[in-house]
Image 1 (cartoon, rainbow, N blue to C red):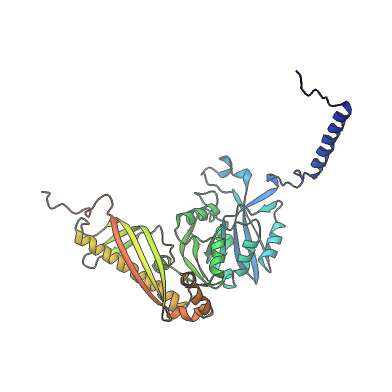
Image 2 (cartoon, rainbow, N blue to C red):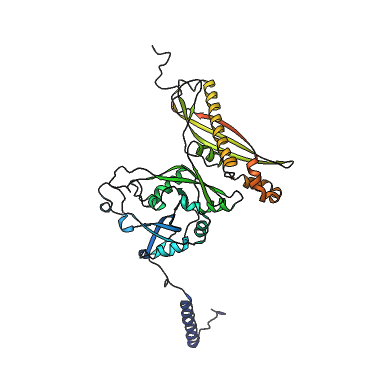
Length: 406
């Protein structure tokens, strides 16, 4: 017990300490922001997708808005299980897209929230007037996602968003799933900005159309689908292409996925249908003695999913011939796509400029302003190596009797 500090706090000290704690607590509470500026979920109109049209010299902005009270429960969707009524459409126009947005908010009784907008559809007529304004708005407006998928359409963007997909909850969800399936290009707002503002100044967008409705009484109960590509030079829409040219364009653009290709045999009737399992397109720029050239090295592996010939893939000669014909077809499609880009459009659709800038920064800096003149005459060599690695569940042609059978 000896040496222990037995000093006690006086009543006056305890009172001063309590006063200090109270004053500190009051000051901290006054500095806290609290939730005075909160926005309840019931006060928000959640935008799932947006569309841009151009009519009568004005920008028309359309928003597909989620209707939460109809999203749950089976009775509100109708007896057929269709998700009709889960979304609603609102449209407004203006001299520019910002003015259209301001007018659009006036037509919605809730605060429009764009943080869940995953799809943007741009009509080709709007694209003809330039999309730089739209890109600036989509990247500058704080709520819109940089990774929202962008599509093009020859139809009305408003009409695409108004569709009531029988399979999905909304047309926005259908478009998002199609982008994830990589049925065409998968271009985001950020990709769009990089492509337009980059050295190539071009972009490729998937082109959306509308399937005919099964019931003429309900023309909106149908699905959007991808058919073709919309090509942009600088920030303006130039033209639309369809198959088979789209295959070559996507091949050079490193965006060819989810496709089945028929390959004909000249020596026999019928064809093999091949599904590529892996496609690699490597761009190798070369500058030597002031001569600019590009080597495009394409390697692909595929699986045979259909055989309508009398050829047996267990025969090495048949397999080798098939690989040769498949590689030849890819070569022809790639050459046609290159012809379109260099001679017809005179536009660097496949971002060759990006590769030259990356590997030869000094030479690129000197010739950057002359790229529009260099690209059409650029020496491009395309090499294709195709290999069939799978023949499906069966190797021989079906429906042809075996020679050993009696």
